[in-house]
Length: 507
Length: 132
Image (cartoon, rainbow over all chains, first blue to last red; front, side, top):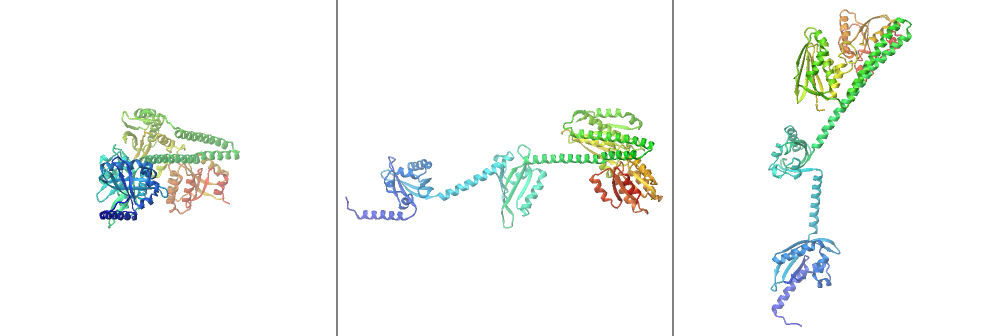
């Protein structure tokens, strides 16, 4: 049944139609939700774009609104959808919510709804809603998030920290990981470049600053430096810093440098071990070479003698000559045995992996040696000066220490200067906590420039010539080194010789 | 047969001295030989003989000796050589087949005529003392 309309009604109806038509023409997704005081929920309006976009059919439009929502809004987002909706209804505040929607032809999309809320005379709450497709923004956001996470995981996995230095303010941002390396946290308040530089080991500072300068001057494409930095517990950590200037002013002065910190303390430790191992290998290789020298020089000379003597015996009829040859054969045979004994002794020193070590009092051992050599000391009127600390004790092999004192003392007597009373001075001291023994004589001395390399060498040491320094020094040197010690010599012709033995008890 | 006025044998090995003496008599080489046990003894004597103009024509030199080895002798000999009126032929005779020694020998090509390995054979001896 039709009621008659007043002109005002016509006007209103015209206005409503006008808005409906306008709303149907604009592409934005506009709809209206009404919630009754009994919390009945229904869509009171969809514009055409909305109907088209969400592919809503007639049944759906007439049916229950909950079905429309359930069939479109992603199950995980329905809860938040209704919660925010009813919260806005209760407070009469604008409604805003982001949710996912599934549309048959387009798949999963992100939407954001913004609505103003009013209450009509019947206490119905009406939401005037605009939907915005935010799928692109959401995708970009998740990409950024993913990329950030990837970066963060990579940094965490590689245990790298980040720093970001603003040269305009002198402020540096240190990431948590960066501070972790030094056992620091935000509360320690390390926020400036000055504070950081103050923690760098003084010995590494010059190198560090010059590396930065070289990058500032564009001489290197990035800044890279490894240095020791003081951690909170007072220890130094080796940190590798890599950075790059990412902003300069118009004059080329750097404004901002960003980079990473990496704790390389362990690598440094391994590097040191490797270098130590290399030293050991070089030392052992040298020993092998020396051994080859000995074989080449000493064993060959004996076998050569055998051959020549046997030739003479073969070719001579003269019995006297033959007798003479046999005498020399004996000499050669003895010399060969001696050489082989020495070689065996040498091999023993270096093949014994664990050398017997005992706490040995230097004074007791020196006095034993002086007792053994008392006749030689008396005959040569040698003056002995013993300044070794009474209780100076070393961890050393007793047989080696005995041969050490015996060799140096015998040598000092053998090479004493004919024009003066021989004096042998024994003293001990400590360098870096390690015992150092000095044995000084006022004898003939050695021209180290000429003979230095031969002094401890084995080239002539196996010859039983009276003038030779003999096997003694060579064996002694090897014994000291096998115990981790070192030996040094200072000498001046006609003044005297000083041997300095550095014991190493750590090995 | 060539007569050598003066031959120096420089070697710290007494057995080697004996063998050389035997080879001299066996090969009928008539020479006035001086025996030294190290390079220093030999160079000191050589310096004295330079003064009296009585230097050896030939030196058999070992490398591996105490006090003054063959190389140190050659270093000193190099300095003396410039003032010599007569040529002195030097042979190295060593048991060393060590590469460092063989390389060092090359540095003394001007001073040393040849490097012989020990043991010295009669053939070696004859090539030195009994040239065809």
